[in-house]
Image (cartoon, rainbow, N blue to C red; front, side, top):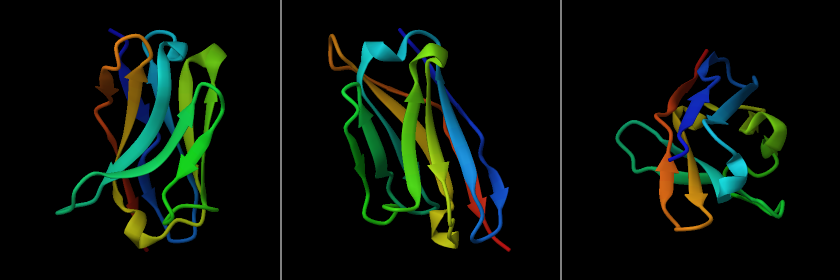
Length: 117
């Protein structure tokens, strides 16, 4: 089974930027849909953005215009570019892939993003 590993989290000041990466151990084309989700302390995990193999994107209203999801098939990596970060973006960010053959979902281990001055 293809595994996912996130990286790129860290501490950033409000208004700053970060780029998260989600590297797959195999081809990301094995996933029909890939996405980013986040879980803030004391809250449920929530949807952030998704990207289909056809290139269709979808974003949560709270991040539209600030975050961009993209992928590099050659590197088997999906990215989340986060700009104009706010303290409320603080969370553990998870990458998820949905297997195109059996529908199984694969999650990464998460990467922590902290937005604070």
